Amino acid sequence: MDRLVIESILADVDEIYLSTDNENPALNPSIVLGFKAANVDQVINAFTALKKITADSDVEFIICRTLVSGIYDLELKTEALDEPVRILNKAISHELLEQIEDQLQRDKKIILGSNVSEEENWIEISAASVKECSVKEG
Image 1: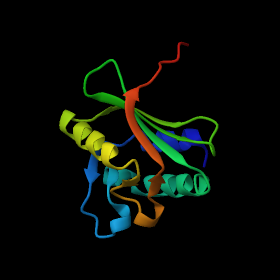
Image 2: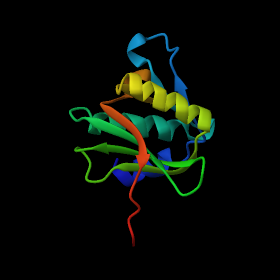
Image 3: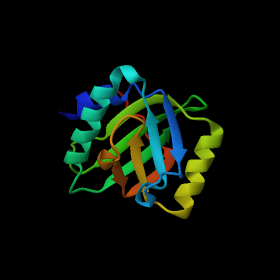
C-alpha cells in the first residue's frame, strides 16, 4: 500500500481526540483518529501498512495551523516515505489543541491510533509538534 492510498483512507477521519486512560500504559497518551464504521477494513489495512512501513524509522507527527481558525492539517513524517502522509483540513477544537500542546510540553512521546484498528498496529511517534507549516506554491 503506498502513501497516496494511505492518505486517501485516513482522510476520512471525522473525529480526533487525546486518550490518556488506555488500559495498556504503553499506549498513554494517544492521539486517536476516529472513523465511521463503514471504513473499518480500509482503516485497519492502512494502519497495518503504515506500521510496517515505519517499523524501523522515527515518525514525527505535526499538527499544522491553516489560515482557517480551528482547521488543521496533520502530517506524519518519516524517512521511510518520500513525502509525509498528509491528512488535510481537519477540525480540532481549541480545548483539544491545548490538551495536545500541554501533553507535548510534558513528553514528546505519544502514540497515534484509531478507534477501529488493533492497538498493536498503533504507531509510536518519536516527536510531535503544533506549528505553522509552509504552504507550497503550485
